Length: 255
Image (cartoon, rainbow, N blue to C red; front, side, top):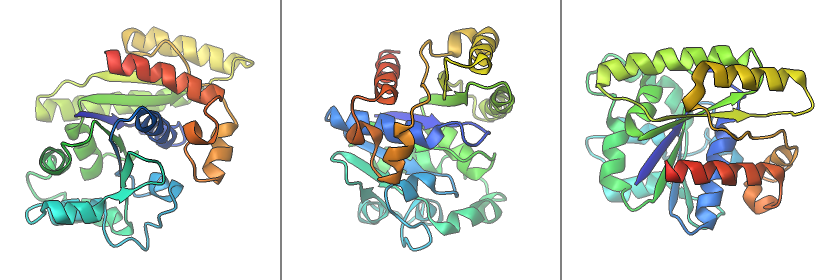
């Protein structure tokens, strides 16, 4: 079971798009995939037509019922997406209260990892959409994974968010005695602009061996597919964005 957490402390860099697109490609390959929405903004959840304000079960229950959770209750919390082999553990509105409820309790950093080990071992891949704010949810998302994917928009201001993300990972690594396998993913690359080229060059200069040597290009098909609530590999399998994510996946699977 491979668990990849997609994280960055800057919003709008392509975290949810990365989870959905990689998840759909893997599902098309016949892999059993679970996507987990740990972001209270619930973008991943909404993408698949689920309303976090109306859902009765989801990530919140994994935390609040961690001691009494069994397989049947876990199954209530997960939903089958319209894409075969692609499931989702959705965000619910109550997740926004988790930090206040759990932050003072000990042993809260491994709840997702323990739940996955116990109830989700039948999945080939688990992709976690991480919130942008350091708290119980981010700590859990990072503790549960064996690889961290960091999408970074190819613009200079986005590099600041990457610096913050690295400082956060260093703090969590120190507390958990864990070293992360990191892949930085340049996203929203526009080869026509100097800004994208400069940011990409700076990214490689600062983080050399951590940066994937491809790019995810600007592709309006992502927006169109989102309007249709359909992953881009299903909506338009021949788009530039899909080809780029397919190349990324090859590296992730082989590293």
